[in-house]
Amino acid sequence: MEAILTSINGAAKALNLGRTSIYALIRENRLEAIKLGRRTLIKTDSIRRLVAEQE
Image (cartoon, rainbow, N blue to C red; front, side):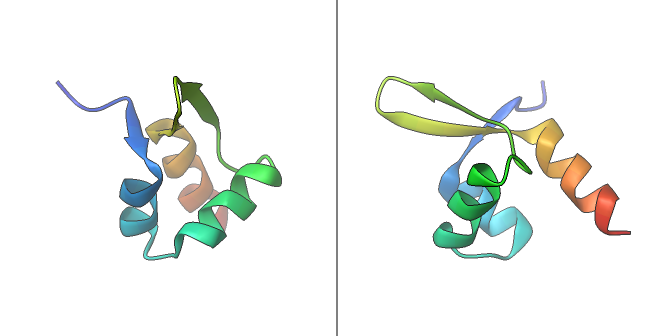
């Protein structure tokens, strides 16, 4: 089964960006994030959409 969510660090690694840039993309509503307890997780679909928009 493929992961539906990834951590901030996982998203940063997948996009080859820093954590600060990931948080900026979340604030700009370009990445969808959810909070589970104290963790912020990124929806992998939103990572794919972000990349597709840039092509």
